[in-house]
Length: 354
Image (cartoon, rainbow, N blue to C red; front, side, top):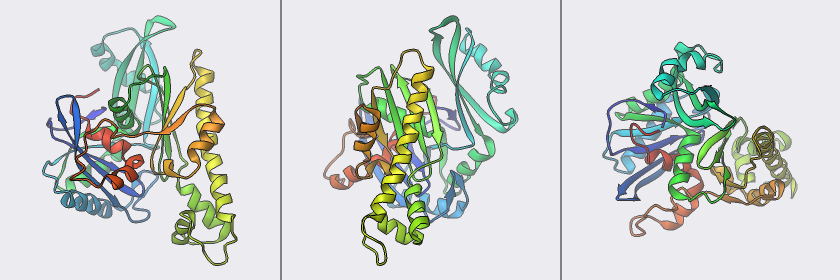
């Protein structure tokens, strides 16, 4: 989807730059099935990326370069994505008009919804269809991202000798992966991606985005609370979170902190779903699909399901993808599936997609 950049090609590799790691996924489409070609995850040094902003471009570029070389990637074409404060996603309503007419007037419309100078952002849109409450209007998905923010990401790939051809938004890349792997049996579903520093929620109704929200809370909350309340450094906090027993840490204390942090994340999800229900016409989320590293936190699915009162499951972004068990360690692939939702959705992108 949203910001087509340079030359078109059928061969592309999806690269998801996260706060703690970079995920690389390459797929090949054979008739109506995707086949896994390459898969890799590289760890980033602490604070190389903070609040989705690249703070150490050399370290990020080195990680991308190492991934590409270790996976013997031949194509130079990359699909990548962004999210965070510098990205705005809005559903807006406009007078019924053609796509060409929307394109001609979208900048003026966007000025009403975007807290940045229009000259400072890249804009894109997608017409979602007529407004069911007013046939004289259409519903339009508006997306804006600050140019300097995008340029930071593009420069990393240029430094590695790669050519970014598609710049997407994280939540829409996940939506792409979901639609390629699941038949949406429910009318309304929520795709909830919880990463290290943030989570994003994308609610689909009949296969179309009707609500999105970015929340600046994620897995780092667990470590931050452990550090603050017990007095550990970041490395000790990570070990404690993963179950290591440390001297001078009372049994059960870490588990209590993790439970408190988990309750906060669950509450944020519930607030978003409640807000959607309150502002939509008789629509309610019927199932939640989780992705992101935090999705693997023990007990999260059960706690979230009990709180929301609806089914919750971890999304498998390679569910319908053909994987050669002779080439890939299937146990490893299964263990990293929650991390791959954005990367898999990007790997399915082609220039000109909407």
